[in-house]
Image 1 (cartoon, rainbow, N blue to C red):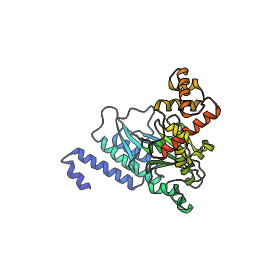
Image 2 (cartoon, rainbow, N blue to C red):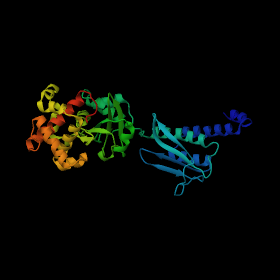
Image 3 (cartoon, helix red, strand yellow):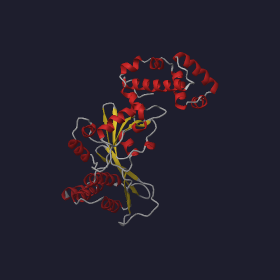
Image 4 (cartoon, one colour):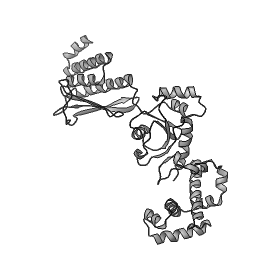
Length: 350
């Protein structure tokens, strides 16, 4: 390598510098240095502040060219590069060079990002969210024995003393992003399974689900039971209530066990299925609020218009919606119709 560097030095000084940088990082990785040592070496090579940040832990390291911690406030990054592990971005490295970037700054950051990923993987557990779907399926399957389940959980980074909630997700967003948001303190793992995303998390902050995500949350008694609960809870989600915890369903969860044929043949459910979209929205708002005026506020209509619609709906359904029994029938029919729609594979419940 030294001979190659010497030959290149007479041809292209930048190529010589790049090779020397590669040699430095190769040596650092062989010595198994930690992240602060990597940042320190990078700051020395670049002769400016070097920084490392891990998304999963929020840890940030900034080292000055002299080898000490860089003073605050930080300068804007002149050059950045992602830290990638298992095809997932787990952090960022950057240089804070006053003025334009140096000719070899990209080389320094490229090697720093590779070395930082190796350190995280070595000293981990790795902070990636995406997991092997086969391991996740082993954890949540009712056919797994406890020994196999425990081993899979250990391989995924969950210790025996930690509770594990299973979350069933439907979303266009990446699962790793959702997992990192709802369980920022880790550990959390995610994998796609058929048409549903699966997230295993020690804690679930339901307020941190991004807009547009539908999610059912299971309990933490056992992963296989939690998975069944999460799938059931997902079927109860709506645009008005996109995140549902199974424990909050109570007796409503029993509706998910009714055979499809029985649901389809029920007159109240059949009446719901025949409703036009506007009528369905009106009934949904009324069932959600139990009030003509509050339903009108949700629909941005005058309450008298909502009252007229509900009178017509009641006649069409053969149900007195203003009576407690009629409202209960409408609510149960609406929920059961949604469960049937979801079970038929028509998409996420409305």
